[in-house]
Amino acid sequence: MANAARSHAGDPQGVTTDDPVVQVRDICKNYGEIEALRGIDLEFQRGKLTTLLGPSGCGKTTLLKIIAGLVPATSGEVRINGRAVTGPGPERAFVFQDFALMPWATVQRNVAFGLELKGMALAERNRIAKRYIEQVGLSGFEEKYPHELSGGMRQRVGIARAFAVNADVLLLDEPFSAVDEQNRRKFQEDLLRLVELEKKTFIFVTHSIEEAVYVSDRIVLLSPRPGRISRIIDPMTDRTASPDEIRRDPRYLDVVEEIWQGLRQYAE
Amino acid sequence: MTLFGFRIPMMASLIMWALIWEVVGRLDLIFLIPPMTSVFEAGVQLVQTGSWQSASMITLRSFALGMALAIGVGVPLGVLMGCVKIADNIFGLWVNMFVSAPLSALVPILMILFGLGETTVFVTVFLFAVWIIVLDARAGVMQVPTSLIEMGRSYGASRWTIFTKIILLSALPEILAGIRIGMIRGVKGVVIGQILVSVIGYGELFELYSRSFDMERFWALTMILFAAAMMLSAVVELFEKRIEYYAGAR
Image 1: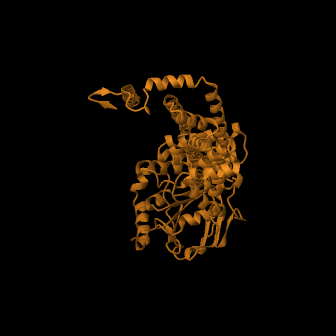
Image 2 (image 1 turned 180 degrees about the vertical axis):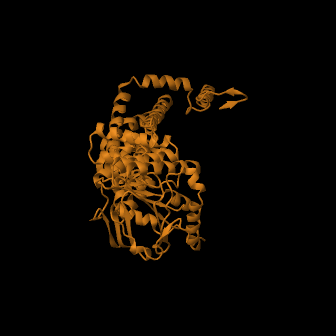
Image 3 (image 1 turned 90 degrees about the horizontal axis):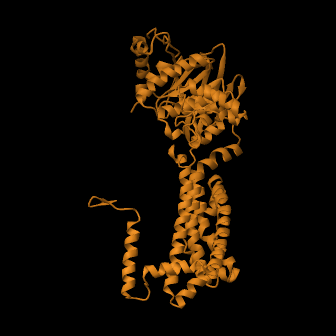
C-alpha cells in the first residue's frame, strides 16, 4: 500500500484516539425486514473532519441521523462527550442535504433560528447570526428570502445556522450534493477554512470520493446492505498546499484510486 | 392580447358582450333580455331601495357567520387530520364524500331542521364552504417537508414549537387557498340557501322579480351578486400573493 495514507482495513475496533467526542458502540438499525446497519463501532476524534463514504444504500445517512438523535437505533448506543444519546442535543448541529430552510423567514432569521429556539434575546442572536452570515460569505443578503438565493447560497445559510448554535459536533448530510460543480469546489475550500477556524468536530456524509479525500482527516468506508465498516483511511492530505496543488498531488490521486478500487465491487 | 397589431384592453370582451346584449335588448326579441342600459338603471335604483339594503344585510350576515364557522371548524379539523393518522381515518371518508356531494339536495332537510329562516341559510353556507377548507388544510400540513421538521427537532424545538413555528407556517399557503375556494363556494351556498328558503334576503327578491317578470331588476341583482363574488375572491387572492414567497422555496 502507498505510504500516502494509513489504512486500518479489517481492524476497525482497534481505532481508538485519546479524545473521542463521539463514540458509536455496536449500532444496528433495521427497517422492518431490511437490515440497514450492522455492528457499527466508531470513534470520532475531537477537532477532526471524518467522512462517512460509501455507495448509495450503505446507510451512511442513517448512521449520521442516529448520531444526530433524529433516528433511533435498533440496538447499540451513541455517546457524545461520554453521555449516551437519547435524542437531539445542543452539542450537535445538523446540516441538511436539501438545506431545510424556512421559506417564510429571511436569511437572518433562518441563521438565528437555532438561537431563537434556545430562547436567546433578539438583539443578541441577530448579532451572532450576522457574524456567521459574514463568515460564510453572505454579507448583504441578511434580509433576503431563501427563494431569492441560489442552491449554493442556500446551503451557506444552512451551514451558518449550524455554526451559530456553537455546537461541538457538526453533522453534514451530503451538504454539497445539490450544489453545482463549480460552486462545490469553492464550497469545499471554504469548508476547510471554517474547519481550521472553528476547531470543531465534523462528521461529513458524501458519496463523492474526491470530495471525501479532499476535505477529510479520516474516511470511513461503508459497505452496502447491511451497512458495515469496510475500511478506515487517513488520507494525510497536506493542508498547507494550495487547493490546486492538492488536487494535482499524486498522493491525493493515489488515495482516490485506492478508495475507488475498494468501492468498485459495489458499483452496478 | 393583440389583434391585427392593436392592443386590446383587458375588459374588451366584457364591453363587447354588453354591447351585443344592448343590441339584442333594443331589438325587443324576448322579454327575458331587456337592454343593458335599462338593467343598469334598474340596478342604480335597486341599491337605493330599503328592501335591497335589508336583504343585503341579511345575506352578508348569513355569509359572514357561515364562513366564520367554516373556517373556525375547517382549519383546525384539517390540521388535526394532517397531523393525527387516527383523526384522518375517522373523518377522511366523510370529508371526501361531502366535498363532492350535491349539497343543494340537503337544503330541504335543513329547512325542516332549522326552519324557514336565516339559520338554514347560515348552515347551508357552512356546509358548502367547510369541506374544501378541511381538505386543503390537511394537504398543507401533510406536505410539510420532513427535513424541515427534522431541522426543528435537531435544533431543540419542542413538539409544540415545531407545530406553531414550522408546521402551521409551512401549511399557510394551502390553508389560504382552501379559504379562498371555500369563500367562493360559500357565495353559492348563501344564494342557493336563500332561493330555496325563498322568504328572506336575496332569495325573496329573486322570487319576487321573477314572478312579476321584472327582468331589469332580476338581472341587476344577478350582476351585483356576480361582481361581489369576484371581488371577494380577488381580495383573498391579493392576500395570498402577499405571502407568495412561502411557495418560492418549495
